[in-house]
Amino acid sequence: MPDNFPQSLEPLANELRKASRVLCLTGAGVSAESGVPTFRDSGGLWEGSRPEDVATPEAFERDPDLVWRFYLARRRNLSSVRPNPAHEVIARFETLFPEFNVVTQNVDGLHQQAGNSRILCLHGDIWIDRCTVCTFERRVEASDGPVPRCDQCGALARPGVVWFGEMLPEGVFEQAVQLAADAQVVLVVGTSSQVYPAASLANVAQQSSAFVAEINPNATPFSDSADLVIPLNAGMVFPELERMLAESGRI
Ligand code: NAD
Ligand code: ZN
Image 1 (tube, helix red, strand yellow):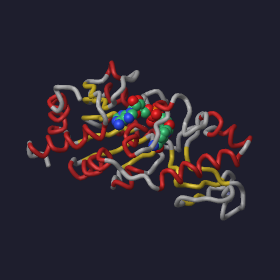
Image 2 (cartoon, helix red, strand yellow):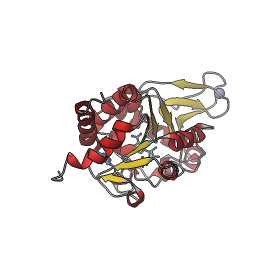
Image 3 (cartoon, rainbow, N blue to C red):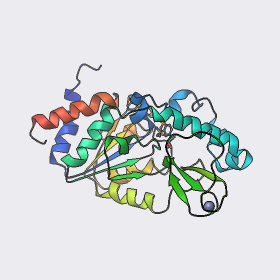
Image 4 (cartoon, rainbow, N blue to C red):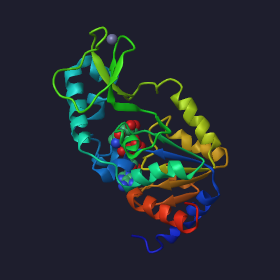
């Protein structure tokens, strides 16, 4: 742990004390301490598979069974996973600030489980089955068995996530840009800042003069532009930030 922790958080705590509109941008790293593997930290393999073999429209067209086996296994792994202290503080922050929003690249549902309701999921939600033909979709629990089919038209269903090479859900990115442009403080947490267009949101915030802090134990392409880099795990930083705000009467 760096010697100057938690004093190194003070510039961020100060900005948060003054802020009424705060945005938290999260990536896979915020769930790492819950035991969910991140994508880039695993040496190019994602839960044992190459992403291009399982997380692209071409892969699904080629072999829907293989793709579904991967997603059913991910759901099984996620079903026993719980929010960690970072998710929990991020959920409490929603009631602390007049406007606190989360924009996440995660599909694991852990922010929702922790209690956030003002949340945009840029890359969809792994707990949704979506028809490949009609507009039908349904929310599911950990599931097993054969490849799911649509309840309405019987066509093949697919996981409700955004695959590599696909567009984001309509309108969601535009809303995220608006939140980034309006925020006074932006927390960029646990993302390698390499997946676009999600990675551009931090730049949008900076161009609108927000204070942007990066919370990530590893440097990213965004680190040099951040107003403050906190090179630590989110599960350590958030409880401390909450304590600092409570001490100064913000909570
Ligand atoms: P990424 O895997 O590319 O990067 C994870 C980042 O988190 C890294 O920079 C790493 O240094 C950092 N990190 C690791 N542990 C951390 C901790 N305890 N606290 C703070 N930071 C930590 O993740 P990404 O940028 O979100 O991009 C991956 C893509 O894959 C996304 O599109 C996402 O949808 C998908 N994905 C989602 C999940 C999930 O839903 N939990 C998991 C893996 C991948
Ligand atoms: Zn259908």
